[in-house]
Image (cartoon, rainbow, N blue to C red; front, top):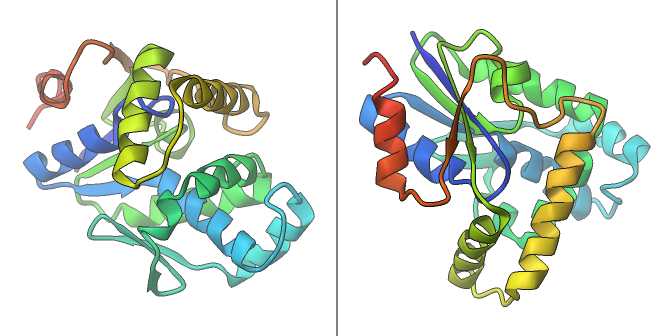
Length: 214
């Protein structure tokens, strides 16, 4: 069966488009960013720093993460709402730079694929996790547009932030993801790059569907 990977920076529309594609195609959906958020949540709940690689690595054996029905389960508990907190997002960026964390997450991510169609989104799906995927896409958008989208998401969670602050945080995350030594954010080989700055979700979805044999 087919694997569709969607990579790109935060705010490019990966999650929304991936969920819609999976629903239309009847495929499984995998939000890999949520898995790193779950790791960060556990580390913080244990009172440890997400920047302390030794501490984070020592906790990995205690962590079990499952992705079912568009929700993330941490050691059997639904933590979907908890991991969407902005603080967890920043912490996830830190733990995602550690080799042992990425190694475990890649193992878990590959385990999700059991021969069924899969739509997965993240920052190293087409480059590292599923390099032989049938279809690879890389979504991007101007940082200003991505910041506006992120602000709309924050407003839904009743979190107040300014456009300048949001741009600054996105820019910092972009640099961290692109410059990290392990599995950096890159355009995967063979991926179709789609600039979503002036496109809505439906337009992006239709663009991808036009490229997929289904």
